Length: 64
Image (cartoon, rainbow, N blue to C red; front, top):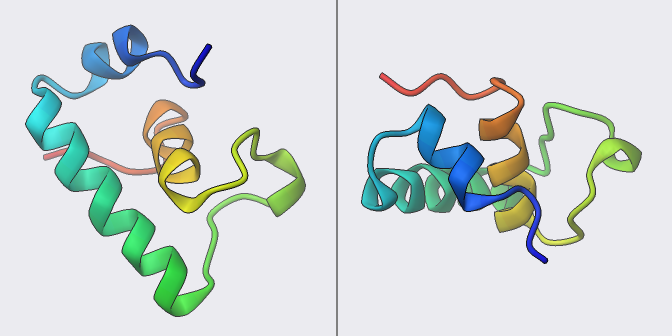
């Protein structure tokens, strides 16, 4: 099972397309700058795209 759940994420972001866009941009930032908003041991995911989705779920990324 994927973490975080798409159902939980769609309660935060109103569109799948917007969610993909946000996660892709944040993942790219993580790759380029090696900057994470949480400690690396706190992430469940190993890959940056999953980590970006976790940040959206925890409210660390604000969707306007």
